[in-house]
Each structure stands twice: as structure tokens, then as C-alpha cells.
Length: 426
Image 1 (cartoon, one colour):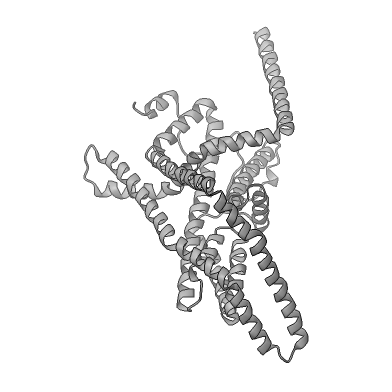
Image 2 (image 1 turned 60 degrees about the horizontal axis):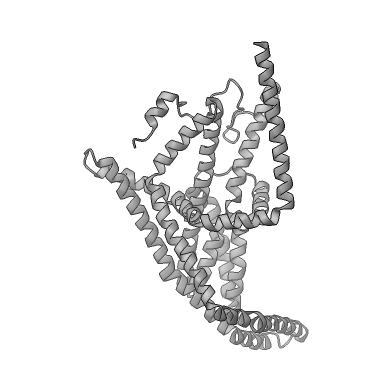
């Protein structure tokens, strides 16, 4: 028995040494071959792009699909085929809802936004002349201020003219000369969208099967306690991402609609363009309101300075309403991160992943923060420093995951027999 234990000890030591050596070799390869690795990752990403699009669409549509399925289960008669028909109708209705939303965006918002952009670019010279005439009238008694203002206008107009002549027009000519490749890229992107939408339908139809199989795999690979902890953290991550992303999309759509109604009632110009800017940038936490309000206010200021003041006041009121009433209602459970960590998450993941990182950075960091916090609680409990743990409140409701703690998941641990019963019928 003693020889067997020693043999096992040497085996584990050998496996550990091999794992450390393999990890070191992998890090060296990544450091010295990062360009080739990045190229390989880009190739894999382009291949899996339809699956990424389909996964994102399915994740966003899953709550709507579940709602439709509950409605169908209430409306349909109690027959043997009721569950399957309810699931099929729910997938079909959620897919049609997505198609309807996309159609509205493409047919209504996109053309109006492009029209506003084109008209804005074409009207810049006239707007500059109007601004100069207005300055000549209003600043006739202030020659020094008028001089500085005219110099600033000349600099801005010269930069715009140089950008148009040296960058915009050559880019358009290059685009027209390479129209074949451009059409190919557009066709590839459209094809990926279509394939991704089809994949999302399959994912929605099989979402319960995939969830059940994933749970079976988790409990088959890990010990029950470790599986409970992982499963609980996955549920927490899903709650963070679903509550934040889906709620933020709904919140931003409502903000854009409110902005559209206000601008329409007040007879502003470029209503659709400004509403889209305000709504889309509102998805970004913390910086979003400023990112959207500044260019929108500048667009309005060119045509009417007094309307720009009204718009800034309206945006301030709208953001207060959104931050204190609308946002919490749409997103439900918050990430419970302080303003410092929200700012840190946006800057960190925004720098790593760009615009997407600015959107998913907050819930992603909330999950990382929760894992680190539970690890600290566990180590404090293990070292006998329970006195350093915070008192149980609503804000610190995560207990240390010690040996005597309850599993993170309320789900029963699956044994071999329950796993067999949960396995889908072929």
C-alpha cells in the first residue's frame, strides 16, 4: 500500500512538471510567434463568424422565445403534441420578431440616417457662410473677438476641405475602382448574417438540449462540489450579461425613441440622425451620454445656437430620467460595481476590444470581480480570519465558499442515474 502511494505521488509530480513545462513552451511560442498566432486566430474567427453571429442572436432572443413558449403552453389545449408545438411556435415567433425589428431598422432608420449625413455634408459650405454672416452682424462691436472667431472658422473649414479633397474623394475613387472586391465583401457579410440567423434558429430550438448536455458534461468531468461552484458562477455570469446587455439594448432603444419624439415636436433638423446617435451611444455605460450628446449638439449648434441650448437641457433631463428611473427598470439587477470599477472596466476592455469591449466590459468585469471576491472570502475563511469578512447585507450577500458552505447552485447534484434519466432520447 505504501509503495502504491509513493508511485501515485511520483506520477502526480511528473504530470505537474510536464504541465509546467508545456505551459512555459506555450508562452514562449505565443511571445515569439504572436503575429502568426494572430493571423491564425483571424482565420478561425472569419470561419466561425456565422456561429458567433448566430450565438449572439440566439442569446438575445432566448428570453423572448421563453416568453412565447409560456404563452403557447397556456393557449394550446392539453394534448400529447402540446410541448413540441409550443416550442416550435415560440422559435418561429421570436425569429419573426427579430426579422421585423431588423426590417424596421433597415427600411426606416438607415435611409433617413444616410440622407441626413449626405445633406449635412453638402450643406456645410452654406452653413459656414451663414455662420460668418451671423458673426458679422452680432460681433460688429467686438472686432478682436470677431477676428479670433473668423480665424477659427477658416482653420476648421480648411481642414474640412482638405479632408474632402485629400481623403474622402480618393477613398471614393478607390472604392469605385475596387467595386468588385467591395461587392464581394458586402456579399460575404450579408451571407454570414443570413447563415448566422439560421444558426440562431437551430440554437433556439435546441437551447434546452444544449443546456442539459452541458450540465451533464460539467458534472461528469468535475467533482460534485466543484461542479456546483462552476454551475453557480455560470448562472451568475448569465444573470449579469443577460440583465445588462438585453436591458441596455431596450433602454437605449427607448431613449432614442424619446429623443426622436422630442426633436420632432420641436421641429429640429436631422431628427433621425441625432436620435440614432443618442440611442446607439447610450449603450456604452458612463461615457455613452457624453459621446452621443457632444456631436449631436454641434450639429444643432451650426443651424441654431438657441436650439442647441434647448437640446443640451433636454439631454441632461433625459439622462437623469434614464439613469435613475428607466435604466434600473430595464436592466433589473445591477452589477453592483462602484463608479471607479465601471470606469476601469470600460477603459480596459475598450482598449482591448474596441467598441464591443466598451459594451461588454462592465458585466465581464462584474463576473471577474465576483470570482475574485469569493476566492478572497474562501481564503480568509480557510486561514481562520472570519472576523475580516463583511457583515451580511444586501450588498455583500456572497458568503465565503468554505468546506461547510452550501453549494452555490440550488440544483440537485446529478448522479449517474439522474444523468441517464436527463439524457435526451435519440
